[in-house]
Amino acid sequence: MARIPLVAGNWKMNFDHLEATYFVQRLAWTLRDARFDFRRCEVALMPAFTALRSVQVLVEADDLRIRYGAQSVSVTSQGAFTGDVSADMLSKLGCRYVIVGHSERRKYHPEDDANIVDQVRAVLAAGMQPILCVGESFEERRQGIELEFAVGQVHDVTRDLSDEDVARLIVAYEPVWAIGTGMVATPDSAQQAARAIREAVHAQFGPRMAGAMRILYGGSVNSRNAQQLLRGADVDGFLVGGASLDVDEFAKICRLA
Ligand code: PEP
Image: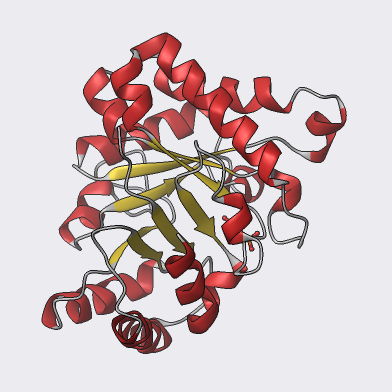
């Protein structure tokens, strides 16, 4: 089954709403000038919460094909949860995607496996698509258990999901040691991990779900390594951190995908 690649930019805690709208405008112009075909590759940006409304207004006013989403979400739907943002609020802002389980959230916030499962459920219930981040630390790689580890993280989330939910899940294989370090996985190891994840989904949900699921690679992706990484038959695009903060660099990665 043909899967449309997705290149998603994770801006983390960068860009206020003015910088965000300026970036989106410049990206739209750059891709338009390059005659970028949005039917062949989806492009998404994940701004901070404070910029989402401005990005929404711009995307709707100029009828842009760029998608956007959030970097995390509350597991509760409303109430006395100071500082939290619900899935429903994000969906009403036109978010299509929500990153769930990013290693920085797992590290700096109390987001454990149970919380990540609940976030995925909240995102799906609100009609959006979770981008579930999985991947081993340097220690797991040293022990040679990186594939089992990533597959296990996916399994923890998918085991109680319906076929319909799994069909909307996107997985980002992001080895923790590669995030923001300049150390990128080899194309072979990115492909091996993506393949292992797809095979596990195949075993659990069958060929249709496994064939439809988009599996991204993330970790120090840039315009120089993107093409090689995409040679992996099971790698369907990227979750890009640092390189998504530069319009020209990000646009180049989109064009390579
Ligand atoms: C990320 O944070 O999801 C990421 C992949 O970061 P970077 O591209 O900077 O390694």
